[in-house]
Image (tube, rainbow, N blue to C red; front, side, top):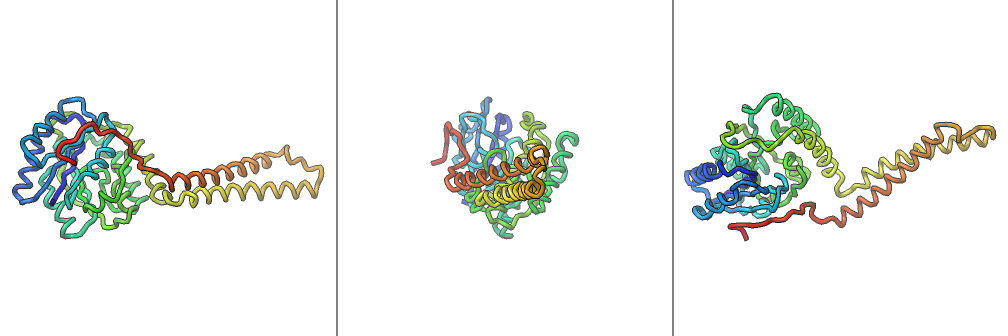
Length: 314
């Protein structure tokens, strides 16, 4: 199969028929074999019934429905497991991403041999105060930390080599940082393409201000996990060693001072309590490192969610 189009959605019943027809037209024009995997992330409208109707008319349409809303990361991860196409393309269901971008996004993977290509909505129709400015800030921070030169990490329109989506796990709200996850997994050829951003035609946005706070926390998490998930003792052990040595050396100085001057009151000095606290923190960090090592060697999938129904998928 040439292409798998993965589309997570939440309450997008109005846009699905138009989006499906548009994708089908692009695929016919370029003679691509394809599948469209809709992931209904706990919609409360008629989205699932619409997907079933679309499936009845077109066997290339497939669907996954969650029992409740688990978030975009869970939706993408489940669809990545099911995808069969040699190139996997993700896009949003609100018609703000153009399916006309699909042929070029595929070409960059197949011919230019990119592992991942991320869209860049250079011209946007969003509110500048609530979306553009915070997005630019977080993109700048992510570029600096990850060393990946992308302008728009959170763009929903991306294309992947199949081996990328089969090698990574997307959990929590890490969909914003899939290029970072891919890089930590060893996929280094990551590119960018300027894509069209369209005005929302149906429905309302599903994202609020909390996504920026969560985004920053997720970035810190993915940076830590990427560097230390397989060797947490290297992080906790280093910090533990520093704290323990500071506390131990300070205590040693106090003990020597007491030996030299028996009238020296150790327990009356703040330095004594600082040293004691540093030793305790150092020991706790060491214990955290050991526990993290045990967890990392015996961990199971971080994803835990219930799929209520599937159509067109084994």
